[in-house]
Amino acid sequence: METVLSGIRPTGNLHLGNYFGALSNFVKMQHEHNCYFFIADYHSLTTHPNPENLHNNVKMVLAEYLACGLDPNAATIYIQSDLPETAELYLLLNMNAYLGELERCTSFKEKIRKQVENVNAGLLTYPTLMAADILIHKATKVPVGKDQEQHLEMTRNFANRFNHIYKTEYFAEPVAFNFGKDLVKIPGLDGSGKMGKSEGTNNAIFLIDEPDVISKKVMRAKTDTGPTQQNQQKPEEIQTLFDLMKIMSTPNTLSYFEDKYNACEIRYGDMKKQLAQDIITFTSPIREKIKEIASDNAYLKKVAKIGAEKAKESGAKTVKEVREIIGFKSF
Image (cartoon, rainbow, N blue to C red; front, side, top):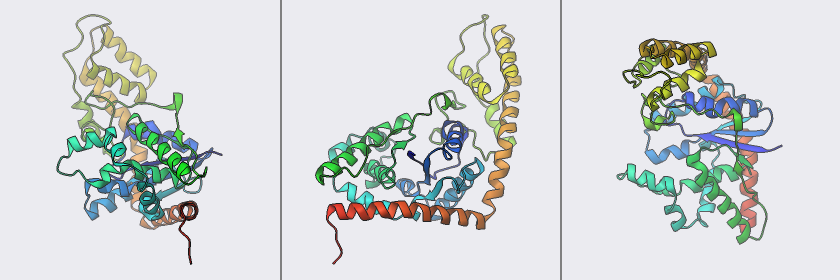
């Protein structure tokens, strides 16, 4: 059975892109693979969250994971900082990570352009911490987006370098997990690309959003004055609305508005109202489940404890063996 690992930073609520891009697939995978799903609170420290926000964000992501169908009895769901062995492996891997390769990382160069006042060591060594997350459970498959492929390649480099330096074959090379036809890309409401937290709150529909919030966001989506020729190609922002409707609405609904567009009879206000209602219908059960779970602190504590124990069993074994390979021995 393959070991699969995935994590998400607690920097905000999960959105439809998270759900269709990964979470819905994770729900299926957890019964077919040895899965580890973690909340990457160590990683979030690169943005210096205040203590209250950090804890609340971790709590909400955990509740959202569970509301979307992740089962703590089927998979290991844990909080990154509940496994301090990750930090030790991160330190050990950093000893064989070199400044040049870390500085060449595309995401690091992008981050230092965007946050010139906060270029910290955590940003520089982000790929090493990600490698520790993966290698600590000896994961062989990692679901990653396009922006994380370079980090996964660096993880393979760190694993192979460790094996070469210490003349061992301890770490296997993790590879990207491809959902294939099950992978759905959710466009952002601003028509600029994929839905994401970093693009602004009006770009994304969050699973916790109330109906009135969803309606306002959808109604603000950019449109034009409408087609002037039958069957003309849709501009990007208009195609975004149709792409969202393809995912969220019934085929008959989509077909109706496609016909209206092609006949130059489209009323974007009607289309947006229908799309908003269809999104609300889909997200409402998940939102209510999130609120129910988030209010049950005893259950969340139990899930976190179970996850920490299961992650510890795997992670402590790896770090113990890595220490022995490096040459740390007790007197």
